[in-house]
Image 1 (cartoon, rainbow, N blue to C red):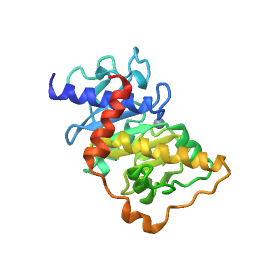
Image 2 (cartoon, helix red, strand yellow):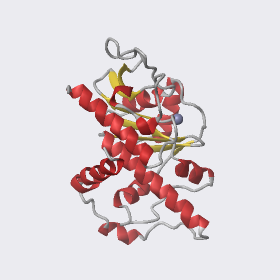
Image 3 (cartoon, rainbow, N blue to C red):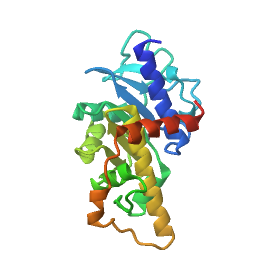
Image 4 (tube, rainbow, N blue to C red):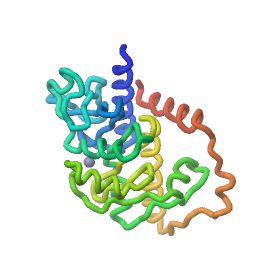
Length: 239
Ligand SMILES: [Zn+2]
């Protein structure tokens, strides 16, 4: 397997993990990975597409930032997603971003529409999630299909310097250095939203954790937060 094929397999696996966690339903949502300054691997569509949960390595195509084939034959039988601009503009805006996940997690969309702002309502329950919430999760207020670079730039402006943005009435975009991190932080965001909705549904109020607790919510390291967490995600897929 070539290095590029290994990356295709990783991006496809990320799609399946996101779907298995309920962050996408059906055929909508896609992941991408920067390959160089002009090209990315992105989950594309074909006439044999059976949905995000069943993404195959072959569904991940090498595409130039302008949406054309990144190498001969890459778009034969495949089409780039309508929202390719989400990926391209996110990658262009920040060189530290190599992986982008655009997903439609219902809990996050519902929480935002319910007027809930994502806040650190818990701590050791999910430490990376708590820190993600503490940094603030911005909202891109338009519910549009982000189908051109002007809309992509608007979303990126709303995202600011952070790793995630909620697109109102639509979904989320999560960016990171790796596919694993982009998907895992999307899972954390989804859990924050799900728990917020659950607390509200139980009649509770949402309150930030005590300020003094942050000193004892350490970074447990990428070996635990990313490597072990990803092994779990892949294993529960049955891959
Ligand atoms: Zn979308």
